[in-house]
Amino acid sequence: SLSSGQPRARGVTSRVDHSSSTRTMAHAVASLSSVAARVSAKSSALRGKTLRVSSAARPASRVAMSARAEITPLGDGDKKGLVDSVETFIFDCDGVIWKGDSLIEGVPETIAMLRAMGKRLIFVTNNSTKSRAGYLKKFLGLGLEITAEEVFSSSFAAAAYLDSKNFPKDKKVYVIGETGILEELDGVGIKHLGGEADAGKTVTLASGQLMEHDPDVAAVVVGFDRNVNYYKIQYATLCIRENPGCEFIATNMDAVTHLTDAQEWAGNGSMVGAIKGSTKREPTVVGKPAPFMLDYIANKFDIRKDQICMVGDRLDTDILFGKDGGLRTLLVLSGVTTEETLKSPKNTIHPDFYTSKLGDLLTLNKVEA
Image 1 (cartoon, one colour):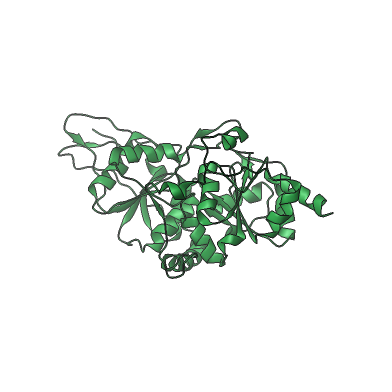
Image 2: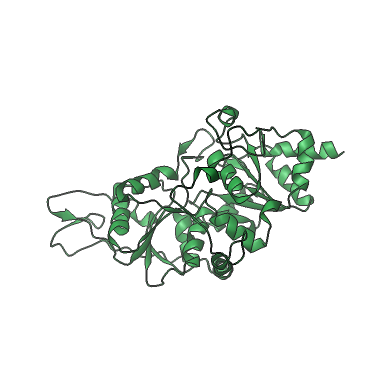
């Protein structure tokens, strides 16, 4: 006989019972739905245009600046001009605010300084393992006074994207990912299966055996999953390949992530890559550098994009996100990108400025004094 997590042989009537998570985030539903509706009807760049998302490759002219562009360190004389030129700072989290569960030096003081100057602060992460509520708990646990409205995660972006597309209430989402995606889908009332419920499932093959999948799955969301396995890969593959119109959504394509402050770990790009390989399909990407979250944020807060500075540690996500969106950009070397990588002739993505860490902005007070 087969366990509940096994594929079945032909003629065997038992099948896996995937129950949707019943957790709710009622406090998020109203605000998310109202804003998502506005976002789906307009882009902050051109009112009246529909929301843009990333799908497959973009033209090279949009992907990067010329390799001949100047690479400028952030000097004391540049800091006041940069801060005065924008009203909003968008910060990446991993590698900018923290590494693993450790705050990066100078972050609390810099956040306090920018708040005192009247700047709007927004925190955006491609990490989908937590919901916005989960990330808020982490911020507060690290002693940072952040509000729920200031936090945006790629798990939220996946749910907001589906909600903005009026995802049918009688359809389901199959999730490769962790609790963050499940909680955000619950928040907009979208049924789901997979995720943590499939963490321990294995596949034992036998002659004539097949795996059944739910024909009501109309989207597969792939986010970072520390319990990814062959069962999940096969189930997602079947849904995308065999369910008519099933959408393939990736929270991000990050190559590596900071699970601890000791080293880099394989990122969600490895999970998405597995599904791309088995389905021969390109996903719709909702996290950085795709424009979805930027358009959402700009519409929600009614911000001009040329009044925003993106601060991040990755060239191909954070800085590209800013460049593609028409933002000012500041690269910090406290995360993934090294100065050697930044200055390499092979690198064609150049920030407006770069510095060692976010806390370097603190000398702005000394310069003004």
